[in-house]
Amino acid sequence: MFYGEYLHSIDRKGRLILPAKFRESAKNNFIEKFFMTRGLDKCLFMFGEEEWKQQENKFKSVSFTKQESRTFNRLYFSGAVDIVPDKQGRILVPQYLKDFAEIKKDVIVVGVSNRIEIWSKDKWQSFYGNSQKSFEEIAEKLIDL
Image 1 (tube, one colour):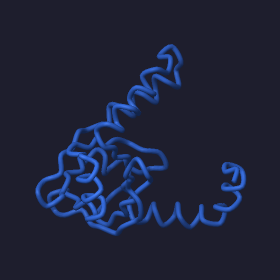
Image 2 (tube, helix red, strand yellow; image 1 turned 120 degrees about the vertical axis):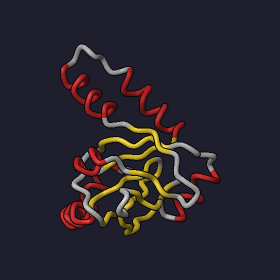
Image 3 (tube, helix red, strand yellow; image 1 turned 135 degrees about the horizontal axis):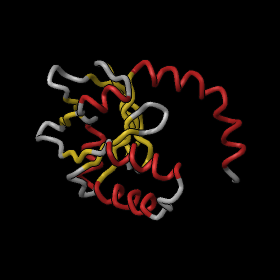
């Protein structure tokens, strides 16, 4: 549903324009509302409302008696915010999420099938540079063709 990587900037008011392809995909899949939260590897995760509900149900089913579960759920859900893009496809990224992801101005917006990831440009370049070398090794371990 969401694919590709796009260079964008956060404007003075803290808004980010979603890539046109993502806006089109959201429209085609009847997604009007998104949920954004702290992601992994210092990026932000953004899900359409239905996908968010599925993710939420998975995490709610994990036992709250386990310390790791409580910690993860607290950080994940306390960071969540619901977002409806404006007519120009802009979304407001809260300051606490920009701080978490170390986002200043330039961002890379990445489509990862069922979610959108928002990275600081520097963090994405570092992640990509460090990960592309092991891409084939990871594929061999994870994918049986």
